Length: 284
Image 1 (spheres, rainbow, N blue to C red):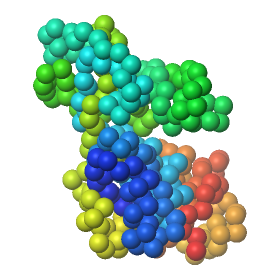
Image 2: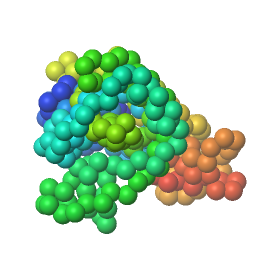
Image 3: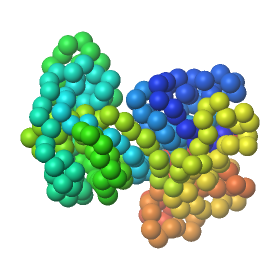
């Protein structure tokens, strides 16, 4: 079985818990995902099954979230899971003040990841260093926030809808909004509602996934945004032997999927007049 599953993760379990349960339920040996959700988080996860684990590097889609930003407190982890480190005065006219700074949180930004995150520094994950009491200086990274809107305010919490590039931390948005308003803030809730063209409404809770074949999306469909080239039997033989192939070249991308009878045989890179195989996918 090869393809992707759309899972609706509930609050509580880790992303690893969700994957482990699916693997055990269906006897799957190879699984992966396109991005974790913290235990506090809920919403859409894309589970990679079988040969689809090879396409993870090509699924860096933008993502949409519904989040809550709680003003007046700061924690080690920038969310409600961490130990509180301080309290701050909550800005008056919170909704108006938050709305005023939203343009500063739109576009291409330099964002510093949370200290407790899976971002690596010198080959080591930041959260492992932080848990050992090491001083951690996270390096700012370039991210893009396409859209951010206020959907409501309750008490000291501002609710936002955010559409951002892969790798954007919602915890960092909460932390930075608090600092920008002369206060402090943490992420109080988060739901991922979309990854690229895949929507939460089409996902199922782990307990609802009773027939994997009914819910498995093909690798070809998973790579919906990548140009595809249909290859013949001779081309397939060349690819299996690690050879380059001369094919009609796409005009808008240097990365393509090579498809044979509905299966993605390989991911290719355009080099001059030929296509070099970068990664074999459904070869066997």
